[in-house]
Length: 555
Image (tube, rainbow, N blue to C red; front, side, top):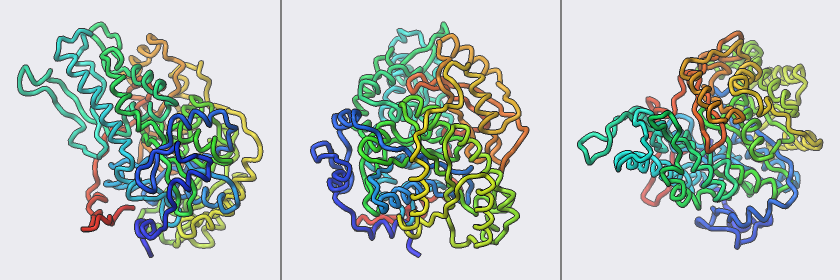
């Protein structure tokens, strides 16, 4: 069987100008990055905002496992299936981070015959957006340390610097560092560290901004440290936000590429959903909505993280609301939630499937709390048996949601036609926004609401640092900010070992970070790493390039 990269490299791509023409995007609105990639101008983005919006479809998934779910693949396959039905459709996806590409997860351009291409470019440097984000973030860090070194007019407390540096790579050795060593001319010695770029507030800001001026203002509001009086110090106070915005002037423009079947796809921004809001940019989603009749987008990790943040953060900020939710599941993953080891997943086991289906049921229940219709997309594997598939269909009947087999990895759009037909039925009716909590609710109660309603927690415990942070939030009059939960993606709880549907657990909030530029509060739970590490056998070991520049090993 051909690998993802082999399938992608054998494909015949259309000129990106022809892809843009499908959506009515003229050549003069494109900034070309070779023949198959382009950025869309901000001028065109503003022009189409007066056009009627199409229907928005959100693709999310059950709680992820090492068995794999296939959310991006399903998103691409669904878009291709809709196109085969004659629908004017566009997809909107996140950009992959180099850390997962070279680590465990691999890339994020889909798979099989439901990929976005050119997949090598998308999964590696693409159009340089992440490098620009890293540069802007690290410029801010450098200017902060320089301010303290050059007289510290703002009286910044070096013990209360909250801004770390970033790099777009999994590098555990950088989690905790000491800087400023050497002598008087080498800066002020202090503890520091690195986050991965996709955990930066800068990428969250980029994905929520709708113009360069909006971007610059948001960057200026970033809280980067506190002075000796305990007052926040922002990026604008050290005069960094203008230069940061200058570095991001091209990165803010959405990127246009295509699927293997020539469906226009906007790929832009990629904050992680376990430590950030996990959604592609508002601008990319809006472009898809304003130029197509149906826009298909996805949110990171399981619905408890990505979908919740998409609905309560992104949709609230951007005035969006989906018309339907596609919940991706696999027989393999559900059996793992039912207690099977990864090595046993190829063996038929209806009992384990039924036991693990409680995870699916909880996600369905959660999406219905938002008043949204749900269809379960079963991403099928060759090892799935007819008995198992029939059992899952029966489970979905009991949950009162349609269940459609999705064979988009193997068959492309053809394998997603039934799913596409069901989605078209579900989006026919208009849906009104129904957020989980009002903005007026206190931050502590917002966190408790998410924990109890979405995760199924019995209660929430706030550690001392979190309680102090809540007092600071109140003091700064930021109580109306939505909540961005930083939580393991592997469980509804804050314990990654608790699979299925854990109940009667206590969620512990260790601290709360103020993302004033992005406009949300980050609640830190469990052992969340903002700088992941590489596994024992990183994917990078299998990636190579030949003398002609042909890449192998990417997936």
